Image (cartoon, rainbow, N blue to C red; front, side):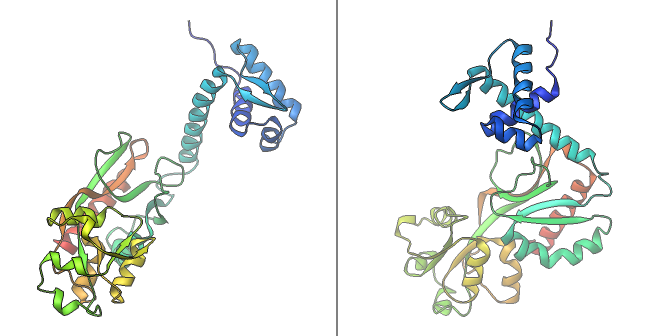
Length: 298
């Protein structure tokens, strides 16, 4: 026979206290008295028949039972918050919040916003930029546009848009521009190679594909984000490496060249949508993104 759940207030008092490791801080967050939180925890311990906290000097610490309950209650309350957030507004009225890296936003998405709005006027899109800190599982994001390698997360509906292809690019302003246009890939061993800390594996991956030992390559300036890396390349400061979609417009305009073309990686540009929140707007956006990428890079 399954036991009835304890009172929700008692569970909430426990979860906040355990998470903050303090009855006083829990009372402040819950806007109740210290005594009220203590009473709720005692109610919960009586209901379960186990101790959840023990004294630890002047403070408290969780028992093994308390740790088990914290894991479960934290997950349950997080899920409740997510669902309540989703239910608190009408999905057709709220904007569709898409997360992506700042580099992808600045170099690819913003130049296409006008066309997106013209093609999908009914889609109220809000863009949220971040670098490795965006997670569509959390409230506030409906989907994530990201370069990533499989396997895909089981809780995501993943729309693969295009395989990732990377390659070295350089500007006509670069000192070795003319010499490198018809040189073999090994010629890069004597050049200044710009890199980004957000994709440290890019150059080694490309080098292996060309039969080059990555250890023989010389790196120059390291940039925090890909956007800065490509700005430096266009200024003639060195040779950068980048995914094809993010430089295709620059190649077409002559701001950059790619003498050695682009090579596939294991990654792909994909739209991640939580399965719990998938809707027709995500399908429409995925179709538009795929068509736009095909139009841009063929």
